[in-house]
Every structure is written in C-alpha cells, then in structure tokens.
Amino acid sequence: MKSDLFASENMAQQATVPGMTQQNAKSIKYAVNGEMHARQGSMIAFRGNLQFERKSQGIGGMLKRAVTGEGLPLMAVRGQGEAWFAHEAANCFIVDIEPGDALTINGRNVLCFDASLSYEIKTVKGVGSAGGGLFNSVFTGQGKLAIICEGNPIVIPVSAHQPVYVDTDAVVGWSAHLTTSLNRSQSFGSMVRGGSGEAVQLMLQGEGFVIVRPSELVPQKAA
Image 1 (cartoon, rainbow, N blue to C red):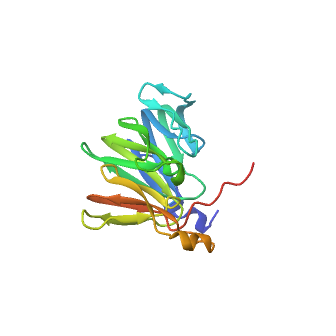
Image 2 (image 1 turned 60 degrees about the vertical axis):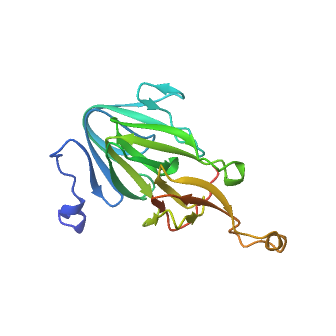
Image 3 (image 1 turned 45 degrees about the horizontal axis):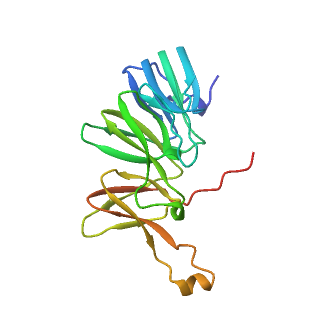
C-alpha cells in the first residue's frame, strides 16, 4: 500500500530514550517506565503495559488534582510502555525545568509532565474576581513539562523597567517570580460609551518572560 500518509514523519517509531519526546507539532510521545502525569482524557494511543488512574480531589502523594479556574483534572500513568498525548490539535511544546526554575502555567495549557516535577495550584496574586479569579499551576523541580497552545505562542520578555500587560484570556504562563497585578486601561467615560473590550489586563513586573496565545480564550461549547 502506498500513500503520503506513510511518510516517515508520520510513522511512530520504537522509543530510543525514556521519558518525553515530541512526536510532531500536535502531539507528545512518552516512554513510560514507572509513572508520569497527564491531563485527563489527553491520551490518544498507547502500547505496552500501562494503567491510567484518575486522581481524586485533594493531595495524593506527589500528584494533586489540578482544580484550576477551568476545573482541569489530572491522571497518573503507570507501568511500562509508550503513550501519545494531545488535546484538540493544539500545538505542543516541551519545557525543560531545571532546579531553581519556577514556571506558572494556566491549567488549560497543561498537557503532561514528569512525576519528578512538583506543582502547586495557586491563585494569581493581585487578581481577584475582577480578573476572573485566575488559578495557575506553579511547577518547580527538575523534569519536563509539555504545554499546549492554540496557535503559535508569543514569548515576551519582561524587564524591571518595562512591565508587560496581557489579556487574562490570552495568557498561557510566565516566570513564577514575576509580580502580578490588575491594570485598568479604560476610562470611566469610555466604559459609559460602550467600552473598548480591553478594560482590564494582567500586569507583570520584574525580570523574566510571559507566554501568550495569539487569540483570546474561546468560550466552551455547551454539552
């Protein structure tokens, strides 16, 4: 049988190294030998002897159920084998987190990560109900984290003398040591006249970077 479908870049090969690798722009391959963690429902295929366990809410060993503003649950994947992960054909990126690093990621952008990483669900400081009550996952330790983004992300440097303002519906994540607060860029008079649609942003200050997606969050479809 012949087809461009069977081109080498589309064929799954036997893993040569343990852990996380990029299958293609839209999916992540993970050679499991023990345990790893993933967004619940993100497994699209696997081979080998693997078990998938949904984690209940609360703290359970190293894995906490990630209940963010979007209510994202995680699962533990255990055993030996290979698994592929993706979510709605979003672009996938692997981040190597090293000791001393701290990265805060919106729960909707987490795909999977090494069990060696620690994370904590935190309320974004300076952002109350006016900003949607943002909750992010702060990752620390050493290991790999796969994140997803609808479209190609924009990484914007943040410096002490030049803060960056981002739409709360477009932000993916940022250096966790940055200071966050709400910024109101719309005058009362503008609001009375109907507003610009850009009344409130998340302001980030310090030294680091912020990751944004090239569109605002699309509302979830009703079930």
